[in-house]
Structure formats: structure tokens, C-alpha cells
Image (cartoon, rainbow, N blue to C red; front, side, top):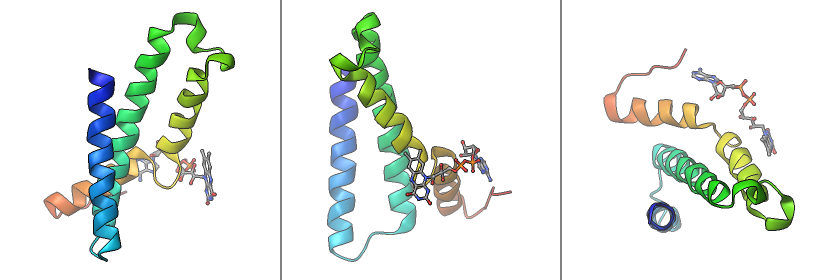
Length: 99
Ligand SMILES: Cc1cc2nc3c(=O)[nH]c(=O)nc-3n(C[C@H](O)[C@H](O)[C@H](O)COP(=O)(O)OP(=O)(O)OC[C@H]3O[C@@H](n4cnc5c(N)ncnc54)[C@H](O)[C@@H]3O)c2cc1C
């Protein structure tokens, strides 16, 4: 249930963001929130899938290990979770915690 919930919540958020982008109303802060949320949930979801598969979750022939590696890459490029969190934090508090 956690994996399905993560995927469903991420899909809903990304679909809404796409609608806002199509309408020319998406902000950078909304994009940061979606990226930080969806990639964190993706990491958790593929981690659970890997755990479910035991040792087979690491072997490339079962694909799960490939998804784990993909999740790690997506979590960092085009803005790491930390940087996106700082951007969202500034938007909701009005204070910048960047150093
Ligand atoms: C698969 C892949 C493809 C990529 N493709 C491209 C590409 O096409 N073009 C491109 O330009 N780059 C690309 N990158 C690089 C990517 O943009 C960087 O890896 C990413 O921006 C993080 O930068 P860094 O690796 O230098 O980490 P660093 O900036 O060294 O950060 C290391 C850690 O410290 C945290 N951190 C950094 N600064 C702060 C701060 N001020 N406050 C709090 N925490 C902080 C980060 O969040 C991270 O966790 C790619 C990376 C990957 C993994």
C-alpha cells in the first residue's frame, strides 16, 4: 500500500504541475516542491521493492536494481532534494536559509 500510495501521490502532484505549466502558471517553487517530493517518494518506493526482492533486488536481470540506480540519479540532478527544500522553505517562510 505504501508503494502504491507513493506512486499515486507523486503522479497526482506531477499531473497538476503539468497542467499549471501548460497554463503558464507554474512557479519555480512549485517545481521544486514536486521534484523534492516525487524523488524522495521514488527513492522510498524502489527501496521497498529492492527489499522485497531480497538479494535478487540487486541483480540487474530483475530490473529493480536498475530502478534504484535511476532513482538515485534523478534525486540529485536538476536540483538536489536539499536545494529544492531550501527553495520551498524560502517560499513558505519568506526567509532564506541558503549559505
Ligand atoms: C545522472 C546525472 C546526470 C547529470 N546531468 C547533468 C547535465 O546534463 N548537466 C549539468 O549541468 N549537470 C548534470 N548533472 C550534475 C548535477 O546537476 C549535480 O550533480 C547536482 O546539481 C548536484 O551538484 P553536485 O553533484 O556538485 O553536488 P554538490 O553541490 O557538491 O552537493 C553535495 C551535497 O551537498 C548539498 N548542498 C550543496 N550546497 C548546499 C547548500 N548551500 N545548503 C545545503 N546543502 C547543500 C547538496 O544538496 C548535496 O546533497 C548530472 C548529475 C547526474 C547524477
